[in-house]
Length: 309
Image (cartoon, rainbow, N blue to C red):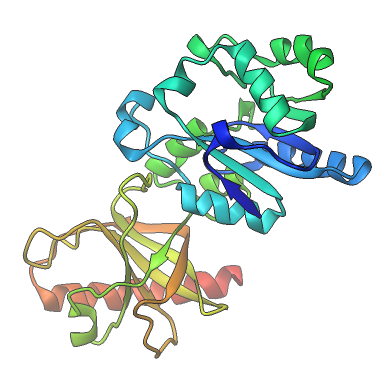
Protein backbone atom coordinates (compact mmCIF):
# COMPACT_ATOMS: atom_id res chain seq x y z
CA UNK A 1 0.00 0.00 0.00
CA UNK A 2 1.28 3.47 -0.86
CA UNK A 3 0.91 5.90 2.03
CA UNK A 4 0.75 9.66 1.44
CA UNK A 5 0.41 12.70 3.70
CA UNK A 6 1.25 15.73 1.54
CA UNK A 7 -2.09 16.21 -0.18
CA UNK A 8 -1.12 19.58 -1.68
CA UNK A 9 1.84 18.03 -3.54
CA UNK A 10 0.14 14.76 -4.42
CA UNK A 11 -0.66 13.70 -7.97
CA UNK A 12 -1.49 10.05 -8.53
CA UNK A 13 -0.60 8.42 -11.83
CA UNK A 14 -3.47 5.90 -11.79
CA UNK A 15 -7.26 6.22 -11.82
CA UNK A 16 -8.95 5.35 -8.53
CA UNK A 17 -12.14 4.45 -6.79
CA UNK A 18 -11.97 6.66 -3.75
CA UNK A 19 -13.65 6.49 -0.36
CA UNK A 20 -13.68 9.52 1.94
CA UNK A 21 -14.23 9.52 5.70
CA UNK A 22 -12.79 9.52 9.21
CA UNK A 23 -12.51 5.73 9.43
CA UNK A 24 -12.06 5.75 13.20
CA UNK A 25 -12.39 2.16 14.34
CA UNK A 26 -12.75 0.78 10.82
CA UNK A 27 -16.05 -0.72 11.92
CA UNK A 28 -18.68 -2.75 10.07
CA UNK A 29 -20.18 0.42 8.60
CA UNK A 30 -16.82 1.26 7.04
CA UNK A 31 -16.66 -2.29 5.73
CA UNK A 32 -19.71 -1.50 3.58
CA UNK A 33 -17.79 1.40 2.05
CA UNK A 34 -14.76 -0.78 1.40
CA UNK A 35 -16.88 -3.54 -0.14
CA UNK A 36 -18.23 -1.00 -2.61
CA UNK A 37 -14.70 0.28 -3.29
CA UNK A 38 -13.39 -3.19 -4.10
CA UNK A 39 -16.46 -3.96 -6.21
CA UNK A 40 -15.76 -0.90 -8.39
CA UNK A 41 -12.04 -1.66 -8.42
CA UNK A 42 -12.68 -5.10 -9.87
CA UNK A 43 -15.37 -3.96 -12.31
CA UNK A 44 -13.46 -0.98 -13.77
CA UNK A 45 -9.80 -1.88 -13.27
CA UNK A 46 -9.21 0.99 -10.82
CA UNK A 47 -6.95 1.35 -7.79
CA UNK A 48 -8.57 1.38 -4.33
CA UNK A 49 -7.90 4.63 -2.47
CA UNK A 50 -8.94 5.95 0.95
CA UNK A 51 -8.75 9.61 2.00
CA UNK A 52 -8.93 10.50 5.66
CA UNK A 53 -7.78 13.32 7.92
CA UNK A 54 -5.02 12.97 10.46
CA UNK A 55 -5.95 14.86 13.62
CA UNK A 56 -2.81 15.16 15.79
CA UNK A 57 -3.10 14.24 19.50
CA UNK A 58 -2.68 17.90 20.47
CA UNK A 59 -5.84 18.75 18.52
CA UNK A 60 -8.04 16.10 20.11
CA UNK A 61 -9.78 18.66 22.30
CA UNK A 62 -10.76 20.73 19.27
CA UNK A 63 -12.05 17.54 17.64
CA UNK A 64 -14.59 17.03 20.37
CA UNK A 65 -12.32 15.60 23.04
CA UNK A 66 -12.41 12.10 21.55
CA UNK A 67 -9.68 9.56 21.83
CA UNK A 68 -9.52 7.23 18.84
CA UNK A 69 -10.55 3.59 18.68
CA UNK A 70 -7.79 2.91 16.16
CA UNK A 71 -4.65 5.03 16.05
CA UNK A 72 -3.26 6.23 12.72
CA UNK A 73 -0.69 3.44 12.73
CA UNK A 74 -3.33 0.80 13.50
CA UNK A 75 -5.61 2.22 10.82
CA UNK A 76 -2.84 2.07 8.23
CA UNK A 77 -2.12 -1.57 9.07
CA UNK A 78 -5.78 -2.58 8.93
CA UNK A 79 -6.35 -0.87 5.58
CA UNK A 80 -3.21 -2.43 4.13
CA UNK A 81 -4.34 -5.86 5.36
CA UNK A 82 -7.70 -5.21 3.70
CA UNK A 83 -6.04 -4.57 0.33
CA UNK A 84 -6.22 -0.78 -0.13
CA UNK A 85 -3.74 0.49 -2.74
CA UNK A 86 -3.49 4.14 -1.63
CA UNK A 87 -4.06 5.72 1.76
CA UNK A 88 -3.99 9.52 1.94
CA UNK A 89 -3.87 10.64 5.57
CA UNK A 90 -4.08 14.40 5.22
CA UNK A 91 -2.99 16.55 8.18
CA UNK A 92 -5.95 18.56 9.44
CA UNK A 93 -4.24 21.95 9.15
CA UNK A 94 -5.87 25.39 9.34
CA UNK A 95 -5.58 25.58 5.57
CA UNK A 96 -7.53 22.34 5.16
CA UNK A 97 -10.00 23.37 7.86
CA UNK A 98 -10.85 26.56 5.95
CA UNK A 99 -10.84 25.09 2.44
CA UNK A 100 -14.22 25.61 0.82
CA UNK A 101 -16.13 22.46 -0.04
CA UNK A 102 -16.16 23.20 -3.78
CA UNK A 103 -12.35 23.58 -3.82
CA UNK A 104 -11.92 20.36 -1.88
CA UNK A 105 -13.95 18.44 -4.46
CA UNK A 106 -11.80 19.78 -7.30
CA UNK A 107 -8.53 19.04 -5.49
CA UNK A 108 -9.70 15.56 -4.55
CA UNK A 109 -10.88 14.66 -8.05
CA UNK A 110 -7.76 15.94 -9.81
CA UNK A 111 -5.03 14.88 -7.40
CA UNK A 112 -6.46 11.44 -6.67
CA UNK A 113 -7.79 10.83 -10.20
CA UNK A 114 -11.10 9.69 -8.82
CA UNK A 115 -13.37 7.95 -11.33
CA UNK A 116 -15.68 6.66 -8.60
CA UNK A 117 -16.27 8.26 -5.20
CA UNK A 118 -17.79 6.22 -2.37
CA UNK A 119 -19.13 7.95 0.75
CA UNK A 120 -21.62 7.41 3.54
CA UNK A 121 -24.77 9.48 3.93
CA UNK A 122 -23.28 11.37 6.90
CA UNK A 123 -20.00 12.41 5.25
CA UNK A 124 -19.31 16.15 5.62
CA UNK A 125 -16.37 18.20 4.38
CA UNK A 126 -15.12 21.70 3.66
CA UNK A 127 -15.27 24.94 5.63
CA UNK A 128 -18.09 24.86 8.19
CA UNK A 129 -18.86 21.32 6.96
CA UNK A 130 -20.86 22.71 4.04
CA UNK A 131 -20.11 19.82 1.73
CA UNK A 132 -22.14 16.62 1.69
CA UNK A 133 -23.00 13.83 -0.72
CA UNK A 134 -25.54 16.07 -2.49
CA UNK A 135 -22.77 18.51 -3.37
CA UNK A 136 -20.54 15.64 -4.49
CA UNK A 137 -23.33 14.54 -6.84
CA UNK A 138 -23.76 18.08 -8.19
CA UNK A 139 -20.07 18.25 -9.16
CA UNK A 140 -19.74 14.69 -10.50
CA UNK A 141 -20.24 15.73 -14.14
CA UNK A 142 -17.80 18.63 -13.77
CA UNK A 143 -14.89 16.40 -12.71
CA UNK A 144 -15.86 13.19 -14.45
CA UNK A 145 -16.45 10.85 -11.54
CA UNK A 146 -19.44 8.75 -10.53
CA UNK A 147 -20.79 8.72 -7.00
CA UNK A 148 -21.88 5.81 -4.83
CA UNK A 149 -23.65 6.74 -1.57
CA UNK A 150 -23.76 3.95 1.03
CA UNK A 151 -26.50 3.84 3.62
CA UNK A 152 -25.55 3.51 7.28
CA UNK A 153 -25.43 -0.01 8.69
CA UNK A 154 -27.52 -0.50 11.81
CA UNK A 155 -27.39 -2.82 14.80
CA UNK A 156 -30.38 -3.17 17.12
CA UNK A 157 -32.05 -0.16 15.51
CA UNK A 158 -29.07 2.19 15.85
CA UNK A 159 -26.52 3.37 13.29
CA UNK A 160 -23.12 1.72 13.74
CA UNK A 161 -20.69 4.54 14.48
CA UNK A 162 -17.50 5.26 16.39
CA UNK A 163 -19.66 6.95 19.05
CA UNK A 164 -21.71 3.77 19.52
CA UNK A 165 -18.51 1.72 19.79
CA UNK A 166 -16.92 4.11 22.29
CA UNK A 167 -20.01 3.84 24.48
CA UNK A 168 -19.75 0.05 24.45
CA UNK A 169 -16.02 0.14 25.24
CA UNK A 170 -16.55 2.69 28.01
CA UNK A 171 -19.17 0.41 29.58
CA UNK A 172 -16.83 -2.57 29.41
CA UNK A 173 -19.23 -4.24 26.97
CA UNK A 174 -16.42 -5.66 24.88
CA UNK A 175 -18.57 -8.24 23.10
CA UNK A 176 -20.84 -5.50 21.77
CA UNK A 177 -17.90 -3.32 20.73
CA UNK A 178 -16.31 -6.25 18.90
CA UNK A 179 -19.61 -7.05 17.19
CA UNK A 180 -19.87 -3.45 15.93
CA UNK A 181 -16.23 -3.36 14.84
CA UNK A 182 -16.39 -6.71 13.06
CA UNK A 183 -13.13 -7.77 14.74
CA UNK A 184 -11.78 -7.63 18.32
CA UNK A 185 -10.82 -4.26 19.75
CA UNK A 186 -7.06 -4.36 20.22
CA UNK A 187 -4.00 -2.64 21.63
CA UNK A 188 -0.72 -3.16 19.84
CA UNK A 189 2.83 -2.01 20.08
CA UNK A 190 6.35 -2.96 21.11
CA UNK A 191 6.75 -5.11 24.20
CA UNK A 192 8.50 -2.99 26.85
CA UNK A 193 10.12 -3.75 30.19
CA UNK A 194 7.84 -3.54 33.21
CA UNK A 195 8.63 -3.71 36.93
CA UNK A 196 9.00 -7.53 36.74
CA UNK A 197 6.68 -8.10 39.70
CA UNK A 198 4.86 -10.75 37.65
CA UNK A 199 8.10 -12.66 37.10
CA UNK A 200 8.95 -12.54 40.80
CA UNK A 201 5.59 -13.98 41.88
CA UNK A 202 5.39 -16.66 39.22
CA UNK A 203 3.22 -14.88 36.62
CA UNK A 204 5.51 -13.50 33.89
CA UNK A 205 3.81 -10.97 31.65
CA UNK A 206 4.38 -8.84 28.58
CA UNK A 207 3.79 -5.10 28.79
CA UNK A 208 2.48 -2.69 26.17
CA UNK A 209 2.13 1.07 26.56
CA UNK A 210 -1.07 2.23 24.84
CA UNK A 211 -0.64 5.40 22.75
CA UNK A 212 -1.84 8.56 24.49
CA UNK A 213 -4.64 9.04 21.95
CA UNK A 214 -5.99 5.47 22.26
CA UNK A 215 -9.52 5.16 23.64
CA UNK A 216 -9.31 2.58 26.44
CA UNK A 217 -11.92 0.48 28.23
CA UNK A 218 -12.40 0.79 32.02
CA UNK A 219 -9.33 -0.19 34.02
CA UNK A 220 -9.68 -3.87 34.74
CA UNK A 221 -8.84 -7.44 33.87
CA UNK A 222 -9.85 -8.83 30.47
CA UNK A 223 -9.59 -12.11 28.66
CA UNK A 224 -7.51 -11.59 25.56
CA UNK A 225 -5.93 -13.09 22.45
CA UNK A 226 -2.31 -12.24 21.72
CA UNK A 227 -0.64 -12.19 18.30
CA UNK A 228 3.13 -12.47 18.64
CA UNK A 229 5.75 -13.72 16.18
CA UNK A 230 3.04 -14.97 13.84
CA UNK A 231 1.46 -17.10 16.56
CA UNK A 232 -1.77 -16.63 18.53
CA UNK A 233 -2.18 -17.29 22.26
CA UNK A 234 -4.84 -16.85 24.93
CA UNK A 235 -4.15 -14.60 27.87
CA UNK A 236 -5.32 -12.42 30.74
CA UNK A 237 -4.73 -8.68 30.34
CA UNK A 238 -4.80 -5.99 33.00
CA UNK A 239 -5.43 -2.51 31.61
CA UNK A 240 -4.69 0.18 34.14
CA UNK A 241 -2.11 1.51 36.57
CA UNK A 242 -1.47 -1.52 38.84
CA UNK A 243 -2.51 0.22 42.08
CA UNK A 244 -1.14 -2.56 44.30
CA UNK A 245 2.38 -1.80 43.06
CA UNK A 246 3.97 1.19 44.79
CA UNK A 247 4.62 4.36 42.82
CA UNK A 248 2.84 6.38 40.17
CA UNK A 249 2.60 3.73 37.49
CA UNK A 250 1.77 4.76 33.91
CA UNK A 251 -1.28 3.34 32.20
CA UNK A 252 -0.34 0.04 30.63
CA UNK A 253 -1.66 -3.23 29.22
CA UNK A 254 0.01 -6.09 31.10
CA UNK A 255 -0.71 -9.59 29.79
CA UNK A 256 -0.14 -13.06 31.19
CA UNK A 257 0.01 -15.46 28.23
CA UNK A 258 -1.06 -19.04 28.80
CA UNK A 259 1.65 -21.64 28.15
CA UNK A 260 4.15 -19.06 26.88
CA UNK A 261 7.76 -19.31 28.06
CA UNK A 262 9.73 -17.11 25.67
CA UNK A 263 11.34 -13.68 25.81
CA UNK A 264 9.26 -11.09 23.98
CA UNK A 265 10.99 -7.79 24.75
CA UNK A 266 11.21 -5.39 21.79
CA UNK A 267 8.89 -7.57 19.70
CA UNK A 268 5.65 -6.33 18.16
CA UNK A 269 2.47 -7.70 19.74
CA UNK A 270 -1.25 -7.24 19.29
CA UNK A 271 -3.48 -7.83 22.31
CA UNK A 272 -7.12 -8.31 21.28
CA UNK A 273 -9.62 -7.79 24.09
CA UNK A 274 -12.39 -10.41 24.22
CA UNK A 275 -14.22 -10.28 27.56
CA UNK A 276 -14.36 -8.15 30.70
CA UNK A 277 -13.52 -10.22 33.81
CA UNK A 278 -13.36 -7.71 36.68
CA UNK A 279 -12.45 -4.16 37.63
CA UNK A 280 -8.88 -3.29 38.53
CA UNK A 281 -8.47 -3.43 42.31
CA UNK A 282 -5.89 -2.43 44.91
CA UNK A 283 -4.97 -5.39 47.08
CA UNK A 284 -3.55 -5.40 50.59
CA UNK A 285 -0.27 -6.79 49.34
CA UNK A 286 1.53 -9.04 46.88
CA UNK A 287 0.18 -12.25 48.44
CA UNK A 288 -3.42 -11.09 48.01
CA UNK A 289 -2.65 -10.07 44.42
CA UNK A 290 -1.06 -13.45 43.78
CA UNK A 291 -4.14 -15.25 45.12
CA UNK A 292 -6.44 -13.22 42.84
CA UNK A 293 -4.24 -13.88 39.82
CA UNK A 294 -4.66 -17.63 40.37
CA UNK A 295 -8.43 -17.10 40.30
CA UNK A 296 -8.25 -14.89 37.18
CA UNK A 297 -6.14 -17.41 35.29
CA UNK A 298 -8.43 -20.27 36.28
CA UNK A 299 -11.47 -18.25 35.21
CA UNK A 300 -9.84 -17.57 31.85
CA UNK A 301 -9.00 -21.21 31.19
CA UNK A 302 -12.59 -22.22 31.95
CA UNK A 303 -13.97 -19.44 29.73
CA UNK A 304 -11.78 -20.30 26.74
CA UNK A 305 -12.57 -24.00 27.11
CA UNK A 306 -16.32 -23.37 27.46
CA UNK A 307 -16.56 -21.13 24.40
CA UNK A 308 -13.87 -22.99 22.44
CA UNK A 309 -12.10 -19.79 21.53
